[in-house]
Length: 326
Ligand code: NCD
Image 1 (cartoon, rainbow, N blue to C red):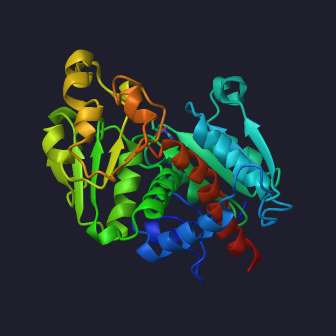
Image 2: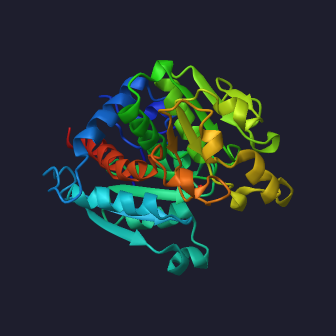
């Protein structure tokens, strides 16, 4: 096996010619790289019922999806993205795979790699796993992180900033609030990295004290425990789910009290700018994260985020495929 040792630092996600080789994290990618991926994604956005873009960048290439954690929109959108670019796609169903016999993720991946697979799309709870695997795969193999513990979810971060850009042109002058269980959110971390790279100055994190990130993390953002103070005059409000599956039992808040202080309701939304957009990565717990009136209201761009997810993942696949051809 020819191991390449490609990702030991974030910028080593890029090859010597600047092409994306893997997508493990947004941390350390420049605003220019992110803007390039957003521009490319825009070109893939198709109206429902319209023909695809006719781009077969992935023809002859194979994508294998390894989802060790639950997923709806991320998994489906990666598969649609790959198929729309002409790839073959295989999915390993983890609960009936050799993982149940004790095979490690790395051994599973290296086994499937021997069948000439070009891309692995991986979701797993273990922080650091993606970077470790990326150092051990062969030259032709690329990894795309589809969610890594509470650490990172780079394609979600990309689709979030693309959605913001479609509504608000100038990142530097925006006030953006991220609210909810930030401590356990890989989405918040990746989206914050992207927002920072794109020049956002006024980034606000709003949560009960024990659901804010550790004080040495995301230090460029301002922290609030008072939701109303935090969302006042915001242009963008991104809500997050309580990710109980990653909490110690003592961290799980009392739901009535949480709802009272942190659920995005219509009256609370009025504190933001009148043209503020409301985002959520999904899945939503209606009545806890947000009231249905807001989820389905005129300021919600949640379905647009989902649609952008396919285009962003096409852009990431195509950008990596460029490097494979050069
Ligand atoms: C998120 C995830 O899995 O990190 N969902 C997603 O990918 N769109 C957020 C969550 O699970 O709450």
